[in-house]
Length: 184
Image 1 (cartoon, rainbow, N blue to C red):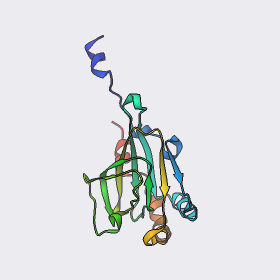
Image 2: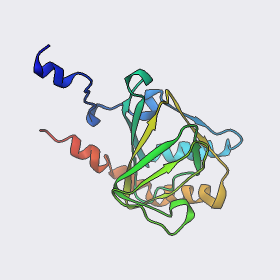
Image 3: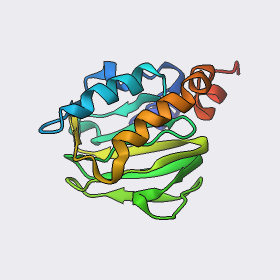
Image 4: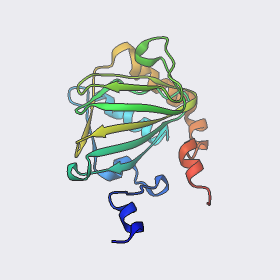
C-alpha cells in the first residue's frame, strides 16, 4: 500500500453542499403523539420556509456511529418544545439562540449544550437566526417527539409565521451553507 493510500484509509469527506435535506434522508421521524394539534402549525411553519436542515454525516455503528445534522433556524423562529429518543450534543455555529429554555439566556457561536434522551427543550432563533450542528452517536434513526404546548409556544410560532414569513422567504441559505456553495 502506498503512503498516500495509507494516509486516507479511514478518512471520509462529507460535503455540506451535497448533503441531503434531513426530511428526505429517512434518518429523522416526527412523533406528535397526544399533541396532534401541533402538526398543523408545524406544517405551516415548514411551508413558510422558517428553517433548513441537512444531514451532513450519518454513519452506521461499524463506521463509527456518528451523525451530524445541520440546522438553520431563520430570525425569530420559535423552536417547538420537543425531545429526542437519543442523547444529543449541539454546537452553535453562527447567530444566536435566545430565550433558551424560557430563561433570559443567549447562546452564541462556540457555545454548546447537551440534551439527554427524553428531555424536552426549546429556544428561539435570534435576530440573525441561528445555525446549529446537532451531533448524535449510535443512532440509526432519530425520533423528534413533540410535547405539550407549555408557555404558549404554539401561539408564539403562529405569530412568528405572520410576522416573519415574507422575510424568511428572502433568506435562501444559512451562512455555513452559503459559504460552502461558493466556487473554490
